[in-house]
Image (cartoon, rainbow, N blue to C red; front, side):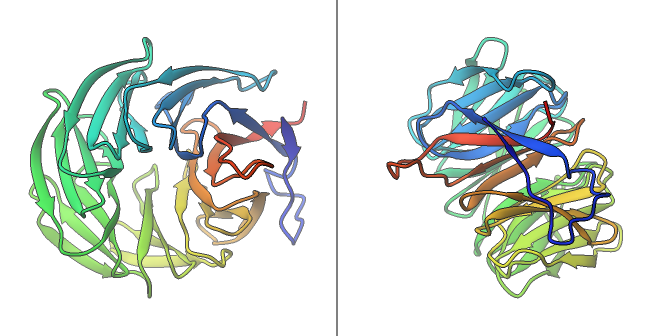
Amino acid sequence: MEESAVATSNGQPSSPFKHLHTREYLGHKKKVHSVAWNCTGKRLASGSVDQTARIWHIELHGSNKAKDMELKGHTDSVDQLCWDPKHADLLATASGDKTVRLWDARTGKCSQQVELSGENINITFKPDGSHIAVGNRDDELTIIDVRKFKAIHKRKFGYEVNEIAWNTTGELFFLTTGNGTVEVLAYPSLQTLHTLVAHTAGCYCIAIDPSGKYFAVGSADALVSLWDVSEMLCARTFTKLEWPVRTISFNYDGEYIASASEDLFIDISEVETGRSVYQIPCRAAMNSVEWNPKYNLLAFAADDKNKYQADEGVFRVFGFESP
């Protein structure tokens, strides 16, 4: 299925996204919570409430059909997943069944797994691929050594921890919190370096600019803030959304940032100016957006319902040229 995207209200013809289209991919039985591209940009993974993950080979040209492989083994929702940043075939999944699993995309088999203490909701790789950080519903952080696939550090926080990320060098570790702050920790000591009072409401999501210059934070106050890593100062805010910001992502060269919420569109803005250049229409609250690391292709998944009010189990990719 293809649908045309709608231009922003200013309708500027200079927008690089004006004539691009969205493709829809259906495979899961229930709604998709997470989408992520591998490091080459040739495979996309999706994690679902249906207790599975899927790996898709997205054709950049021609047919909108995609080969997919189902990854089965979890016994609860796959809430978030991420690829090894150095290995195009290794995918990690975090599930409510308390396990973290490592999958080989060539075979579809689980190669490693570890059981942790709580329902896992966040997962991210260290940029060198050596460690995985996992957050659970009890605000506990676990660091996993990828080579041994064992937990090497656990830490419980006394506040709501929503999303986690390393900076591009792996020297800093970020936590977004329900207090409206971003905690900046040194790695590997995990000692607090800064507590940034970022928003007037809880901070939900974080994204790291691929150049390492900025990080962005999405909040329940409907704002996205952009922070300079070297100065730890807010450079600007993005204000197009009207509902709590659920998910954000920088494109491959850091020129654009996508942000989404319960608003029925995904906003794409220029990072350096804050100007909104495009809005992609959507039908429901957004769960996950992620830009391809090589191309201006944006994968996104929402709380879609079909005509029978059942979870639809689809995700979409925006950025294809008209056929």
